[in-house]
Length: 506
Image (cartoon, rainbow, N blue to C red):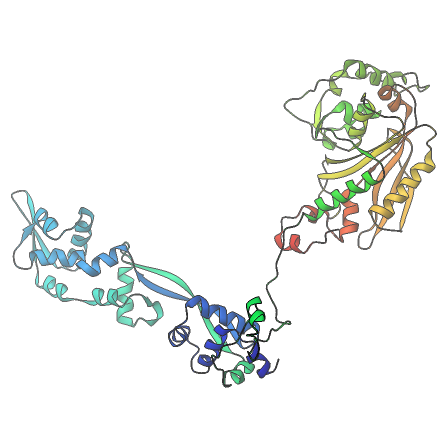
């Protein structure tokens, strides 16, 4: 911007401050010469800094100020001087000195200590009372005025004190509430090269209109008036409007997607029982995933209440296959173990609850967004608590091709990637089983979903009949990483305000 354009953009406050900058850069002097308020000058300087006319720097100054006692001693005198004033002509006892000099018990004790240290008093005892007498050194002490003189100069900058006053300061700061040292932030103003040239220009405080109002238009008063030029390129403070947290917005988007596809949302408790989390899924009680290190079990309450008739059917499936033609797992099912409470380890527990519900619709399409918990090593792609999106489609004549079609849709619609592959997998409750893999630009191939067709040993005890159910569980946290351009899964739950302000939101 050239200087003429700059002058045309100046606010009335800037027009008052700019001419003064050519004479002085001292803030207090600018305050004095412009007759503006401190806040008005600061506002003008900040605007001029944006226009590269000045540079503002913060500097800390150590300022000595009067404390509560310092203000009192400046009016009444130091307590040790008032003490000596009472005995300079005649010795007196403690009670008389304290009353006449208006000294508290504490002030009397402090004064006596200072005066003894300076050999200013002699102490005798008469009629069981202490009698105080001034010494020649005391008379000299009474004439000293260094402390009072320093208090009269306050407030003052610490570094402005000479050696003599510095010693007085060192003594006074040891005493309670006489002086206070505080840090004061001041602005250092520097003119830029451009600012030095601009400050030499003639800048008048003429009336310049800042805006065109309806009144000016009505009466035509705008004609012949000078309007302030607006600088549309100047940097302005960023405004961060309220918005939904980036990951929560993504989950809402996923939910809307499923609704638009005709799915119905399921729900279930976070504190789940072993029955729905594992047993109802035809996961044997001796399976490695049952180990205490792979689930967070609840200490209190340790057990839940369940439908005994439903337990009986699932127990039969585990032990002998329950009318499915299967031989089951062939072990003794532990009814007490199945009632143990734990934190839900995967979203399929909700699917099991829905399949056993009287409200289940066949055919039907169901999904859930669930918070799950599983011990793990925390890194860029793993966390101990995470979200899963899962569900199932139930209906006659469903097969593996339908499942593959759903997985392909998840990769494209939810992860936004065309680089995906479906590979064989293993889950105790599905047969056949498949895993959906997708290629992340930074993390390489990662697993997005586990899927398969629910086994009859799981479906028949819960539903009451054998019917095809295709199911999936998607690691939605990782899909969110794709969509939101995040490299570390922990950033989904970040509390970093700077990150949240700049995070991508879909």
